[in-house]
Length: 415
Image 1 (tube, helix red, strand yellow):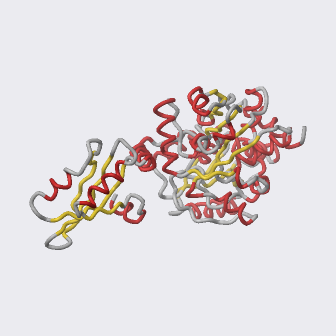
Image 2 (cartoon, helix red, strand yellow):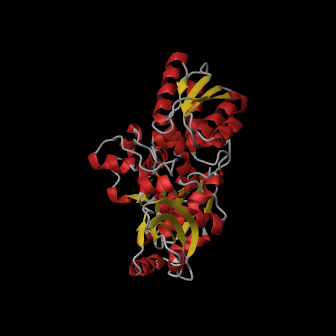
């Protein structure tokens, strides 16, 4: 066994002082749907509801062995890494400072405090994460603290490899196919490094959110680059730059094995797993399940493991998830209706709606002229394709009718 595999097993053994292996569960619904044996590695069931605890624990454990006098640790995060660091600070009895953006939701701050207790201090600094990260690293230099990277650290990568160690022990062998999310690359670099070094004949599919596909961008030019995050919905995986260390492991991944998941389609998966399976997944945690349709031909008859990487989902986001899922399914749209200001005009428009169409929003915007007014109207339907028929009917009657659902500027401002 190679050094990395040996260290990964040691990290896995050490983790047993903190929590038992997360379950590897066969999912009957997905297995039947795709004609494969599909297992879910449930990292959403760790003590902090994500795999991030593993890397944070292993990195802190090794620092404490090398330098027992180091009692001060710092990280920058507004999500799962913060909670993992807080948890292990309390476990080791060391001082932790968690730097978070000023804009971090109170719910995430509260959860981090809950896991860390008196061992951690929350420091709110910067409006954007880059500012928060810079402040955290500057403080480390001044205070002599140790900075715990969320992914681009060899000990963190080694800790995340424990997911692969557990998976193989629980399954009794290597799976034929592994599907896992990619953000900064710590999980994928750790798991793939372990599988390679034990000569596992496993094919891997990596998944990135469309709004932050930094690995795809790096593979295109052969080196990490900073990209623009165009959608922050998958906040656990939308990373502007893949890690340098993690990319060295991932640079030879065939581009066809790195898939892009649209954010609205991810919302469909979140709803399905919650409603059909009772499994609560955060957007990043749903990535691996979300792309099964895309690889259905590759996995038929195979043993497949999907890593559900996290379950820290804020239920206040459910209305947004429903809305985005309906958008992807073609079941809800928003329009600007140019309505003649005459008696009966609204009635004429309403008569054009089908029996499955339901108005969910109706808001008069402003009077454009003496003869017409503009209305923001939201419509839900039960059948994909209904909007094509509605558009034809509306056009035949001469109403101005503009679909703004996918116009990000107008939608953000009006909806």
